[in-house]
Length: 191
Image (cartoon, rainbow, N blue to C red; front, side, top):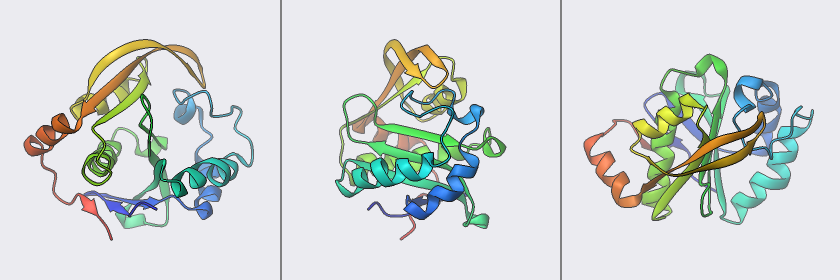
């Protein structure tokens, strides 16, 4: 299991099966799911979070193939506001979502920095890639702000349809240069 991580304002807790009930209440919103991979069922089933956590995410974490965290504000540590995950693979290494009330506040950028540090500094991977719809301006901006660059385009099936998409990338060397020029206090392991 990955460790808990923290940022200036967030606690990133490793995903647990008990998180499914709370996530089920906030996740199935069009504003959250429309640009996610089409593997997310829509309409979202009543047991969607439980099934995904129990049958896919937690077993993949146990195998060391994926690393998932829930996002929580430090001052409200019992309340899940989003999630972020890392995936071992060739072209799709990171995914995230955050509930609408917390979008546009820089919180996901903080979470991305923390998990990118984990990807490169703890897991030791040489490159991180994240595909995203060109129409998903908010997600693209997070990639821009964290030093990533586009390496390719193509079409991708998303919950809301087939979209022109980009693959964003950053290497370990590029990440370390970015972090040296963009230090952020309070980032690191919470354990």
